[in-house]
Length: 91
Image 1 (cartoon, rainbow, N blue to C red):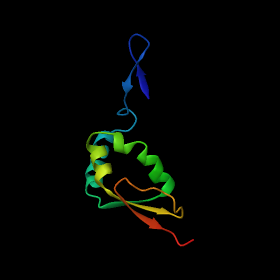
Image 2 (tube, rainbow, N blue to C red; image 1 turned 120 degrees about the vertical axis):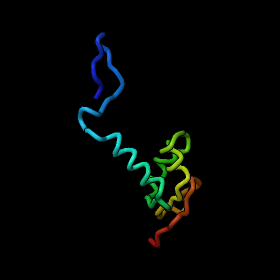
Image 3 (spheres, helix red, strand yellow; image 1 turned 120 degrees about the horizontal axis):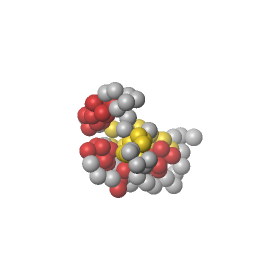
């Protein structure tokens, strides 16, 4: 939620009033994610993430981009290029 500034505009988002400790928890999650060996996801999730993460910078982007990805799909035409190993269902 944005807080109104003195001129009736808005400041940057601030969540500290709503969720104390959210910044600490975010950093804890980043450390945990950096230690993850792989992610398992479906094709639709994979395709959505590929439109965002490969073009980002920073600690979260570095962790997301270098982590091995396993994609479960029945779509034999699914292109998987973003740090992954493809898993295909038998259906």
